[in-house]
Image 1: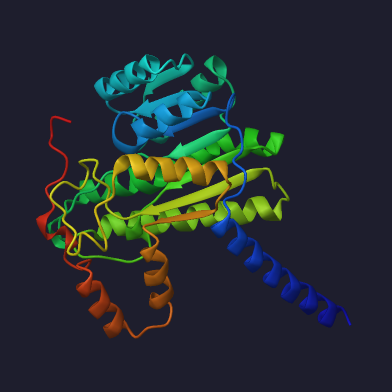
Image 2 (image 1 turned 90 degrees about the vertical axis):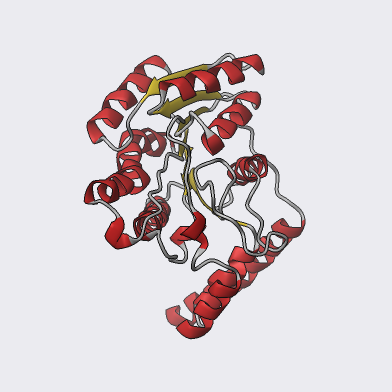
Length: 305
């Protein structure tokens, strides 16, 4: 009897959650208040990290900025304070170095307090074919894009668990959902980041820490300079994303406790098709959308930045 009752319960809940998801898709849920939260953002010296810092600060959050670039950090702090944000703290941090992360995490806890929203945004890309990629740069990609998430979670998750309150945000990539040419290390690092974030989410659920939320963000190419040179084959259908738009979507996803954010929505269709289509058909579609050789024109951010 337990088997049948359990099965019935699962069927009812599946239907309920599907209907709930449909309702929230049509009528967005209530946004939680982030005023007073301590938000730590890695890679906050430029791009999406900077925009997220400015937007969280404008919502009344205390923002803690980490970046390896002191000049970029100073610019973000100045912009935040020009907008009237008073609680802004910045630290130069090489997120690829575990001891650097742990040391600065302890400093943040003493000087600012326990981080309640952690946004792992720092990332790098080489953009070379696998055999042309130096070993040292491959290691660096994995250290920044993946391993840094382990160290920041280790540093800040315990306090979230103790309070049963917090939010873990992983800025991953569409490249973590489907591999592409000239990005083997980048794709591997983003696949790993997604798997890691999903696993931690399951751990929080198993521990009944329902107050610790997780959001995984998988965007297409964003026009921040990181992927300079990359062009969309069909700009009207799959445009290179505007940074302001992406940052606003991320803020909304966090405030609505959305677990997964794929940008653009077309990515949902590609993920669905990938799950059952023959590989040759999938390759045909990826080629049609220009995703297989999208890195051929890659230049990357100028060195001076």
